[in-house]
Length: 448
View 1 (cartoon, rainbow, N blue to C red):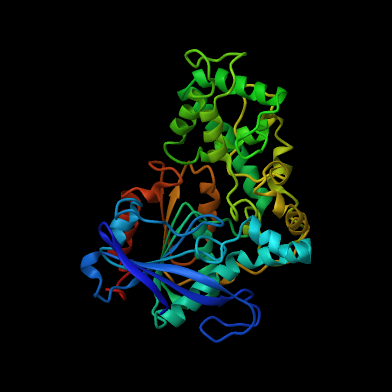
View 2: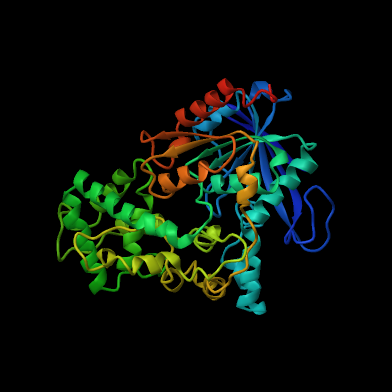
């Protein structure tokens, strides 16, 4: 293994490691040599200090996203599942290609690719989807861990990656866990947003029911933004559409409280009550900028995670097309509705961090040829034990669609709960429950 460094944080031993993988996996096989352009795949191996020299089985974490880097841990409880996992496993935390320390993509990357034109930028971005990510991980398993089968834990988009892994390389997986992340197969971006926009409206109503004083505050801020040119500290204009995306957090806990306290600081003068004359405070604008800022590759890849092989028709801004059929989300409607995890074309005009992606996005939105990420027949014959936590009220990944998929995946089990929101894994209870269920069924017998 390519060991860069090793160190301790409180309660954890960490090794930083890195290998090279092909930028384009076409014509290459994981575990074998390759030529052509390559990129770095950075990963960490985390163990409990008392297990540093023990040969424990491996658990690889499939991070949410898209475009999510592996967690940066402060201690065993800073990400709740870790505390339980390190009792039983050596935990592998990759930074998925294009994120963290794995050849991260941002505006600088797009600028370097700009001389080749939008087509070259779009082709590059297509190399950072699930088919490439899973080949990276399988290459890592075969070359750096002696081909030992490992357990996968997929959070959110990591659950999508799990089904890709089980479709492409099930022989590499001993058992799988997913939390809030079983995609609908067959995949369809438009169908996803047809389910999520009604839930966005429900979540907004629940927010206003908890904090009715915010109905007036939100309306006053939206009216101000519609009539004035309000700028954030980075120069972006704060529009009503961007303000509405504060609702992207509404599928997590305690998101209602986070948004409420952002709104509490909106007005500068006097005691901060709603005022037609008071400017919006710098503190408020700073919090809104942080909460609604772009997250490459999160937004650029958002709708393409549903692209499975050859498409019948281009995606063409699925979320915007569905939103256009819901006039209740118009910026001038009151009470104003917030939008959830959805990408819109205006983002690539209004946000400086996304403008360099616009030309490539226009190309990708008309593309119909993507890598194959799900094999429905292979999933039906699946023999890898899969334990899924399905959050009944999940705002991002519809629980009914998750259960429909699981009904057609061999050897799958699910736990449906409304005790947690989409981020339930980050507490201490969810992974412990899934692990014990799998252990009691004998699904981990070959590992221990």
